[in-house]
Length: 134
Image 1 (cartoon, one colour):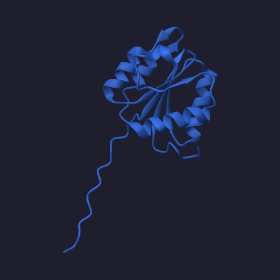
Image 2 (tube, rainbow, N blue to C red; image 1 turned 90 degrees about the vertical axis):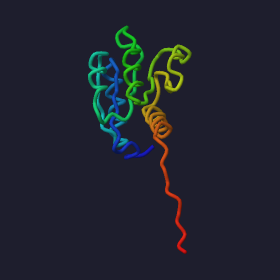
Image 3 (cartoon, helix red, strand yellow; image 1 turned 45 degrees about the vertical axis):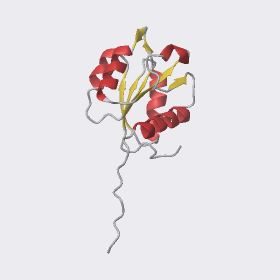
Image 4 (tube, rainbow, N blue to C red; image 1 turned 120 degrees about the vertical axis):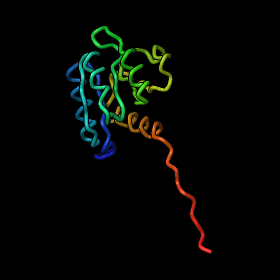
């Protein structure tokens, strides 16, 4: 994972632990992403309305409040998201397409999983067939 891997991407990070949020934010910045950070569900819901949002990284439990409502909103908007959580991966059955990275993990792993998620979520490119000259 190198600098610029996420260039041009806008990523919402919803994490209530300040040091964890800072670590993720720094890693995303290093990879070239613009970061919107929220510590509460309410702030996350507000920031999820940003037009240019590419993806989100969510802690499933924010001070005891789960982020299911935020997941639903992101899903409605077609914005891919992943979880970075201390909960067991089998607790996320409602969102089977969302990758889960278990805490603690290296920031590089989080960035790599996010980059893979963005690549898998990108609309297919339509390539025009080559025309042969007569």
